[in-house]
Image 1 (cartoon, rainbow, N blue to C red):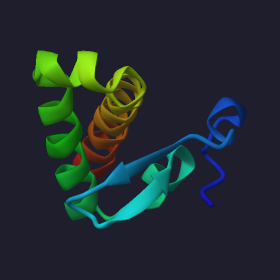
Image 2 (tube, helix red, strand yellow):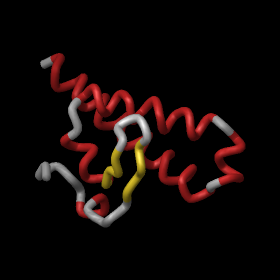
Image 3 (spheres, rainbow, N blue to C red):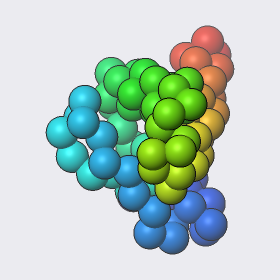
Image 4 (cartoon, rainbow, N blue to C red):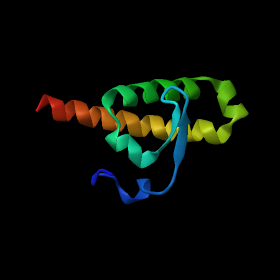
Length: 84
C-alpha cells in the first residue's frame, strides 16, 4: 500500500467495479494503473449521472461519488507529477 494514503482512507470501504471485474478498497486507488483508474472514473461517473441509481441503491450511489472524487484527485496529481 502506498505511504501517501491518508489514515481516513485506510478504513475498509469498498466498491464493486463491473468494468474491472473485482472489488476495490479505497486505498487501492492510490496504486491502480492509470488505465484502471480511467475505467473506474468512467464507471462511477455513469452511476452518479443516473438519478435512478440514487433511488435504487443510495449506498452504492454515495460510494461511487466518493470513489469518483478520489480518483479525480489522484488523476490530477499524477498529471502534475508527469509534467515535472
